Length: 409
Image (cartoon, rainbow, N blue to C red):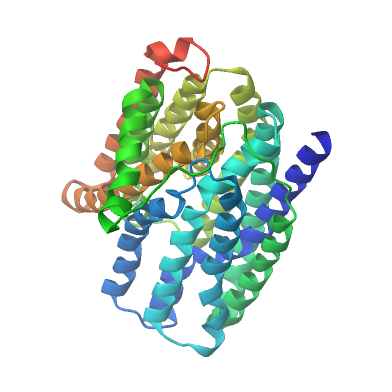
């Protein structure tokens, strides 16, 4: 068991380190589309709108996993291959529409592989070591992402067309992940059995995942309460995303360098420094208490950001604190499936996490953009922050915050 846990821990670290280069470059896509490929505002907006929609569709990729041990590795490996493959053609295809397709395809399979990957992690590691290994690998990947973001920005400033080689190179590096993941030894789970999924038509394929998720939320009131808490806080966080650039430019008037320093350095430092603390808490405290602290931390970010009207120092303090909240959010969101599932298959729990994130992503950002224009970015910051604070306080007062997990009701 110890040997298997050590192998899984190393695989987790290498997976994060090898995946991060392409993930970091992905964040530059809107700028590459607009600046180098001459994409229209419609095309850039379409890319933003497709992300949550694709996240919901990715739900179907893992829908047939329940009780299928033999499918877990192939699910992860195929998702890893397919999400990177289109970027390998970037040096030879100069098209905004192709890059939009590659980006959409990437996000689909990036999200689609998460349930199976977290189930593999759950089966190969005990709960205590799972949280510690996941947090270490996340912190290392985040630190790598900060350095790569600054490096990629510098390269693209000097030669805007180098994105073709960068996408090819980062995709090729990411494919090495498949060799690492293919070596993972995976035993059958005690709860595993032959898949009972008998699909007889397209209607069953489309409806069954939603029906199973609805049944899960009805049967597990603790998990349902957790999801609604995350939905309210996540909605508030996504609501403020369109308001932040408007606030930064129209209200603060800050430069690109100041914004990059806040996002890359201050936020990254907060994420890395806080990750060990969140790891300790998630191993020792009730998951509802940890989640409520995450929501309260994110809500406080909007308050601190608003104070930057009087001093730019508050901008860096706010983003450092945002990194702290993100460190906890990343850990709780990813590990909640294995935690709530107990001895059950965790992929169905993680699948609900994924689809709920997609649902709020389809509504909150457009609404936040409209409200920012109509009522101003400061109003949206306070509204989003209020939702996060309310969710955190409400979750902390719930009856589930007083017990241990998993709780079956």
